[in-house]
Length: 377
Image 1: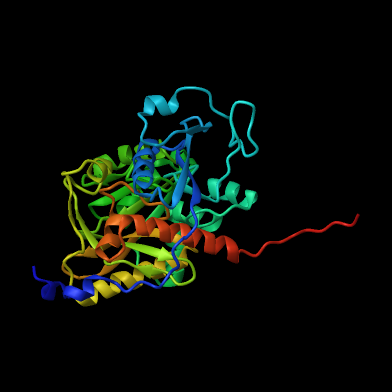
Image 2: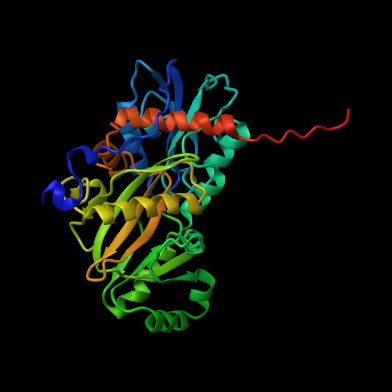
């Protein structure tokens, strides 16, 4: 398909980005990775890519590995084998002031490359806010909303962002009367439908249900990861993604298209090269490109995001309706990940993207309103 057919002629493939000053001093970046969630290994791969693409002439990296038990330790880099990352003593908590065995951490800015609960959900962000240090990505509220798909969809609806029909199922209601839940799902949704944990990413725990008899097992699988589950209408069409970057004036990249190897874009398709086909940028008419970018910024704003997010879409076949599926506040950063690839296609190479993200973290911290409580002597 030609650039004309896609609504993308030669020069328009590069989005004119808002001018943003480059960081001029050598900056120490504390890279936080690993974590307690089911996406631990994905986080390590993302952090390794970030580590490789931070310009050593501009940045020093303090690599901080969080193991699956939530213990923290300084390591040489995320490039080490996981056996070496996990070996040796670790602290129960980040040693801000240092100990006899671990020197204090002296970082200018913190970069959480943590996916899923206990990293992407506002918990780490709250710690960093309490410490009053600059960090990359959204704050507590935006991170928490971006993790909880049920709350996210409520905010999307309120902001007029188009979403697919959904139902929230809580574990207490399911254990009390699974038959009633299954009957309600049958009434509300045709096939296919999707069942997913409300608070997880990288398609962990998600099932595409094409047979009614499989609904019960799909819900049980989702409850293995969360106490709140979403059931959603399945959309037959194309899967699109768009990257957003910014604080008060967010910008959207050109959209890309994902053509999964299997039934849908699951974890294997995401992280095993060669299994999934990507079109970057997506082969779309100019009007659809504009609609995707506009909706991506609207979703980003509705969720009180800052810094970065990747917004996922469905483009329904036949009707051409565009739906926002979800938003990820800390998208994967591997070399085959869509977030950096979409910005590269839009004119922002990976190393420069990382500089922009760090700059936005400093900008957000500088603009933060601080409440100082004074007590009488």
